[in-house]
Image 1 (cartoon, one colour):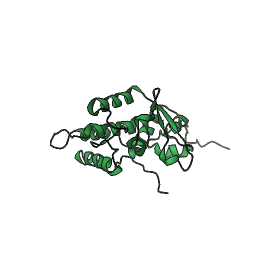
Image 2 (tube, one colour):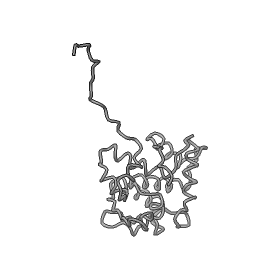
Image 3 (cartoon, one colour):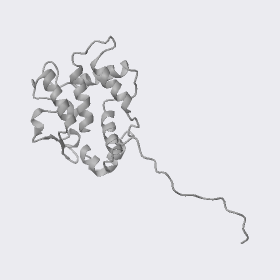
Image 4 (cartoon, helix red, strand yellow):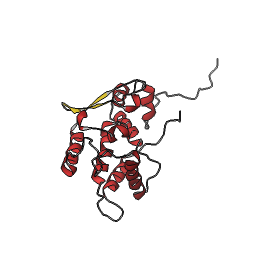
Length: 196
């Protein structure tokens, strides 16, 4: 098992990449840019794996929730997760419907109404990163950013583990990249030379 990645995608770089998904180096709007941006935003806002968002179907939406059965857990814990549709998630979904319509059973889809391939969506991400001079961040780092940011907002490990569909808290800890370093309250003094 490879060691966990240590990269944390900071807010400024994240925003630069998001912008570069929409507009190329010549300042021209990218045809599929809004869909690529919706993909990235849903990965972050739901804290789900890229595969789950790439293959997300409208049928997974019910009564204000998104029902995920993570493919990675199918042969292990079989953990499911239900994510509430927040206002931020709803905005992304509205943008998809406004720009592209609901032409596919998939939420994120190509001009042929099929889901993006892993390499296709990765290509858009890599181009955007290169355009703004950011290296060593992958699409998978979006999940680590989301879980780390949730921790920074004060959500506890159990709440974050539920969102990530992790059975073992240690797995979630591997994703949280910016740890709070405790401040010591111990105060010592150099001993004085006193007779015993």
